[in-house]
Image (cartoon, rainbow, N blue to C red; front, side, top):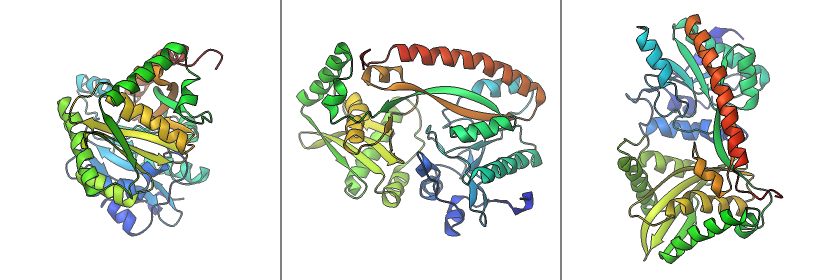
Length: 375
């Protein structure tokens, strides 16, 4: 396949969606690189329009191959932190940005990044490399690829970087109590106490899909989401328009949770189901309730996964506190192509050192799981 056959969608994902050139991604995490999700990000202004995320979708319409590429002017919203690399470039008097990033923006979820079969995947990676080289872009990064994709990237000389997240695995539990019975006594007791505090506070919980959620529910959730960022003195990546668009386009995937007290909403969380997995995304509250964060972000998610027989619940990036609540450490991956050979060698050496530390951290987390030794 020749490079001239590839198109870079300078108008972004709205244009791609309109000509139906974007393939439907399959498997866990595919939703987050599908046109509904990516177009909602662009149409709502979360990407493009001076956000520092310029969409450059790479695709071959005839072969049904595609790759969500962005030209980035910063490293926000990636969940794979390379600020130290940018600082090293600056100290050397070089520009680290712009860079190419293949990812689902603001979404630390492993899933397909090169949409197509194995041969198409290799062709897409080659086209991405050609795009980087043709425009003399200093680095390209693929965030949270699948294992097969990571292996192909490594075979082509890309540098792999390990990370750790915490996921909950459904071992065929009948209900939440069945899950609790597999935990050590102290962890089981702690979770029951936390859930009891929420009940004693007079809080009830509603779980809805996108069909049942009303405009008022979405408005309240969007306000909660924005409030979480405000409390951390940062600006939210997403907005009400994005949530409305996803709710309309992917109603069956949405799980919107609203907590109420005295018939008044006080907190909300948002999950999405895709490929046999549940993904916890965002939460927020308008008033403090002890342990409500754990209830809405973890325990309700576990109940949803059990009820819907979903294999895995991914609770989001980072958070050792998830270990005490039945989550377990899993490795994640990113891949990096550094144009400057001096920095490529230095980063490769640093990644080898970091990889040993990540492996030790993963092993330590495994040793502190909440499950009984006999379980």
